[in-house]
Amino acid sequence: MTNPANFSRHRKIAPFLPGDEAALRNASREKAAALNQHVLGYGAQAEAEWAAAGIATPDLPEMRRYRLDRIRTELKRRDYAGALLYDPLNIRYATDSTNMQLWVAHNPTRHCFVATEGPVVLFDYFSCEHLSDHSGVVDEVRPAVSWTYLYGGELTEMKVRRWAAGIAELIREHGGGNTRIAVDHLNPEGVTELARLGISVGNGEAVMENARLIKSPDEILAMRRAIVACEAAMGEMQAALKPGISENELWAELHRANIARGGEWIETRLLSSGPRTNPWFQECSSRIIEAGDLVAFDTDLIGPYGFCADLSRTWLCGDGQPASEQRDLFRIAANQITHNTALMRPGVGFRDLVERSMIPPPDCFPTRYGVLYHGVGLADEYPTLPHAADWTDDTPDGVLLPGMVLCIESYIGRLGGHEGVKIEEQILITASGNEQLSTYPLDERLLA
Image 1: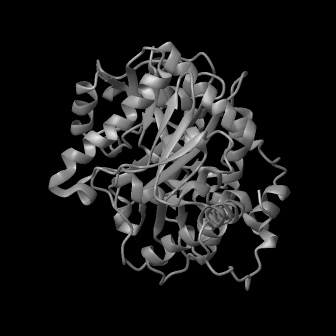
Image 2: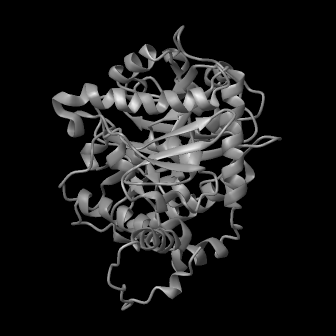
């Protein structure tokens, strides 16, 4: 890999000569790869905060090997020749590389094939080979054939045929005669064309969610770092909370601080104040926050290393003391979190967990949060555990296992009430119990 220091800001490229193109392309790729964001790291501010928190550096090559082993073990268990991945989070899990993550989430173009016995082939945009050179697990980069209507128009069917021919060739070469593949997201034209070529498609979400379920020690280190960065951003956000600031302005502080630490994006706009905190799920607005308002939010933040820090807090705006109703709501939410966290241990069944969980009182139950617990990793992940009253015949059961990370949720607001309280913590299931990974303090005035 070329040292980025060798590329002077004022370095001149020699005039283009016949036969030079390949050499210049290689030099350009080496330069770009050496300056990739994942190679440059997260910067002095984030590193200093992680050092102060005593969090070691994760072994990223080991983490990447672990993830590929998890995917391939799951593929073998389900008898697939490989996995075809379009979800940018699944591509991140398989390759630890990124490219316009939000854009490709709604424009399914960049994709990846992971052979059960064979190579990892990344299909990326033109001249984007450098974006995965750091990973050490991508064996080949090919140009993506994009067959969304954006690129294909009324000729999309022709592009689908060209795309499917390339996928089928890979499967014939590396599938060992197996023509079954797991696919996470694919439009029906792709399924139909693969079937015409003798390739059958199965549920890749099941493969990837189960692969992502158990985190390695290095993944936990990376997640700890993402949470530290998120909580530092929350601190800057709380310092900005003054009467007269708008919800949008306050929410922007979290975005700014996340990006400054190398974080990637925030999945939602869940911040509300005063009367907009009840019912929950108001997206942040231009409303001006007033002294004495409750301000509730859910970070839903994708931070450094691509890991999610999914935390919720409720703060009191201003220097005054809370009303008794605000304290009552906060106490109920805090008690629910404490009680339900204590239940989270390895070997506990999902249904048993929810049936023993504390639920909101009757006047708050109709406005309850939709789930009590959900998995978390690169984003919200399997499993999602509802209240016992919401359990249905098609709710999957399972068992808590060491290495799983779940978020525990509470929203407390009276039906028809003025305000509500949101609290959420991130919990690691350990061999002997659990560990709360999130540490940002609750508002002491509301706890009093």
